[in-house]
Length: 423
Image 1 (cartoon, rainbow, N blue to C red):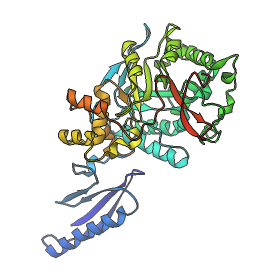
Image 2 (cartoon, rainbow, N blue to C red; image 1 turned 60 degrees about the vertical axis):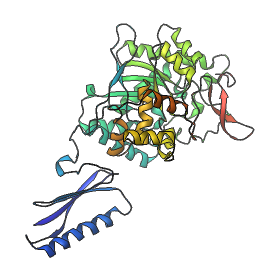
Image 3 (cartoon, helix red, strand yellow; image 1 turned 120 degrees about the vertical axis):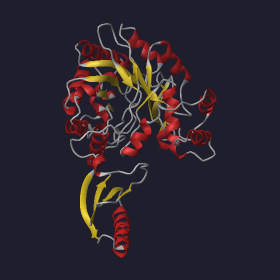
Image 4 (tube, rainbow, N blue to C red; image 1 turned 135 degrees about the vertical axis):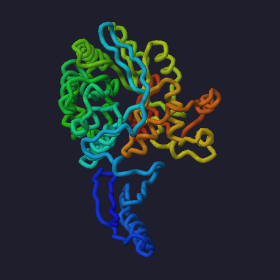
């Protein structure tokens, strides 16, 4: 009986099959030899990369897969063009839209795609999105600033998932502010994604970083084709960031009326900036902010609740700090009580507060973990405990009246007021 091994490189999703050994039926010695061959093959191939290995014989199947509780079989392996429902379903929340538009329902969990910049990141993005879509994921958060829209669009096309089954979010960067600039950014986004519309279209920031921010930081801006310095108009006192926001909002409202966009949103906006847009007669349905255990702005939260705005959390795990919590930390104790991971408790805290989240994940295990938070509930006392907990990694960019800017006295990033920054 021949023993063959199917291997899958979890980074490239490349599948391969090869013969391990051939044993005689009923020959215990050859059985032992074959089992040892399997172990040696596994250990050898695991070195330097993550693999899922499935050994197949006439009467024996052995699954060796780190983190998988259920053995994998050849039929469960997702290949090009195949679609499964391996990932759990996600509930949605209705978004506010003007009369005659919609309805639009935002899934409470989606896949973040900020995997970095450069050719290697493009491959990671493509493979992660394809894996997510092929296994039942349907909600993608994208941003022009990430410079990976073509990779995402390629994965969407390869997945075979119908466009109507997807919820796709898009964001335009602060150097695309202005009426014509925002329209051009939208058209660039959908062209690269290979779609004709977006379900949610959002500002990425309310204004540019101050002029003394080095143009090489972040380094990816030139890679996307348009440098920060391409938008001098918004920096001029005679025009200003407020006017640029309003001009962009006019473009976004027109796209919504034309059916090219479902709901409209913002990111990192304070209350005054939200009110600027609301005064036009249309208002944002979503404000994407940093939100996680240890950092959740009560002022922004209250405004959102009173104005039909859904908060969406980026950095929901505090940049990974929460997932590394000490075993005696409050979140770790609560996780053990529910037989869940620390990451799941962190994400459940967000979801139970009515906040959507867009965690990143490049493997199926992590995707399932991030999405599997809607089948249990935290107690009221646990929510209070977690709400009072602190985290060592407060990234701090979405306070009600603050943003990231340069502290010229120390030569590093620090918080400063939107008003002080002239925005």
